[in-house]
Picture 1 (cartoon, rainbow, N blue to C red):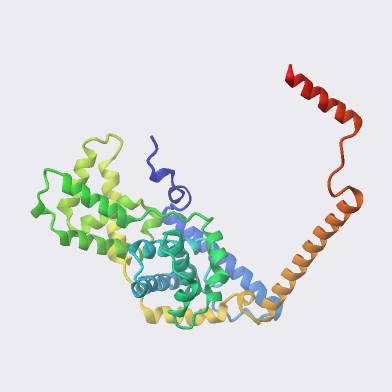
Picture 2: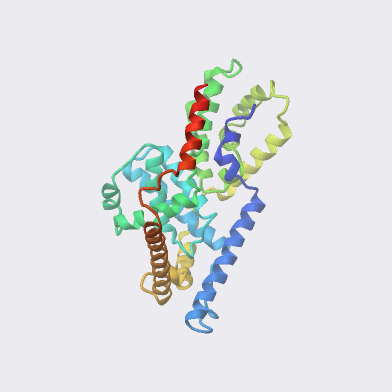
Length: 342
């Protein structure tokens, strides 16, 4: 029987190897640089020569900074942990389909958080949300909401490691070999802190929530983690202790080495450079932006005209209420009905 997690969209669509993540980000960055350079050159030949474009590592660093803003906002609004974890996941997934040189992480982050309040059934009105965030208007969120949802492939359900950790903790309470004194409450709180730190890493894009939870518990209390693992492996013939230990060790390394906020000063320099290499087509009021909007309006107008022409021809050529059956069709249909009665 397939485990529930392996039937989820998270397992099928949003699990990668570290190498796949690096290649995906590099490919997105390369394509964005090429497209933006072409836009610069179309406006003024040679204008892209001195532009210092961001690389994929710098893009990821900027996204990571805005990931750290989500817990702060959730604390301000008193959103539950489910909203915080879901919003962070949405932001990470968005930038596996998009680049910061097209869409700055600030408004994407705000939109991801607002979307997470709805998908986790913790809604807040748009006015209440934006009025409590400085220099933010409702349009800053609404303008990007469909784009964010589309980039997520409308796959909103997320399996979180903090829930898996709670499951592990409940399991420990039922083990006869673990006394209450051996599982002090502060162990769970320390493990939960490690789970929260894991959100600053790529762990959830590579490993299962249960693996992250076990790694967090192992960082907090290696003996308890081992006892839980032993209890599960005793009746599982298809689970390799070596494979599990290897994954847990990799996650622990990831949490301890990269599970912290980035250096703010370093990211400010990246953000400053972003202002110079941002896609001109996304900068409101620029020549490239106005040209793109004009082209979109031209295509939309052409589409409307084509549709109107199709409707006109249909009205002129046929009865708008549909034509009646001719005699032969009527006879055939009557015979079919008679046959059904036999």
